[in-house]
Image: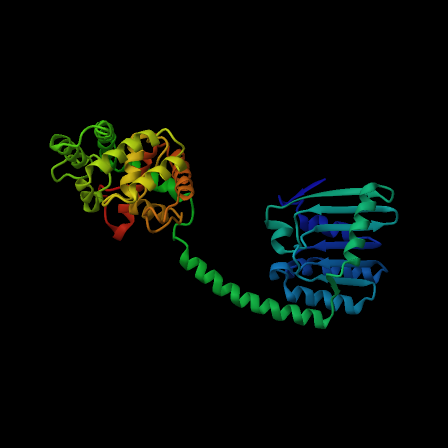
Length: 409
């Protein structure tokens, strides 16, 4: 029979059923809590009073077993010589079984699955176990008896006594104290919205924002225009760099990155602050656009790696510009990555590298970031990375200082 915590057939019913009327009882669990001890200790006491033999093997890994629960079992053991309680020392391999077996005459009943002797496992957790009746000559009986015998012979187990209990209780107290410190530090470090379901709420607000939807339509058109401009810049590669070529490049480049003498076709709002330095290096930047056009056909890791190596030595060229070039040429494969991306991902509970530069973002890391942003895009139905970037940009400005939406990237 399959046992699940779905009401009247939960583990708190089946485990006592295995114990009652048994001549021998064998239990092996990874974790023991007070609720588990309170449930079965009285039942074990009754069977012990009727002459039954009881043997428990209890794990202590991760210090999740409750010393108070062990103490109640120690008292039971001290009252009944037929009660054996063995505690597993912590070792390289975690002691993790959840097995309950009893014998009545020549018949056995066993429950094996996921349930420890804890309050949650007995009734409220999602647990799943199999309860089986088996005879003395069943192979399962032989295997289970051999397994319990192996535990019995293992040097990692010690008989529970006051010394073992006090040593474990002392370590448990230290762990509990340090765990509280860790959990506090962890909770303080985690983003406040550490729940991916928050994406759905953000997206509903985004779709209901008329200004955001208008900006998205404009962004789509700007991307079309930006692609034409980038293609025109890439086409200058290999041509003589004269005054006319240089002027053409600079006009196109301004169209991409700034509204000061250009059309600001890229989404990034502050790319011009550093990117204007690149105006004085036309040949290198033209070659970078030509590389970006060919890199657009490569996998994200390889294309980004090529752009990173070529772009890093050029003054004014950074991660933001390189990924804008890649995303414009191949919006289905390359994500824009900059400070706004970092802020938006953090708001969604996804910790991203906080310094968006070539040195901080390796090709494997960029590939993973693209995969993360692609998964986000699939959740919101974004057609490509450019549309997902618009959503992330909107989140960034909604979160930043509590201000409303502004256009950036």
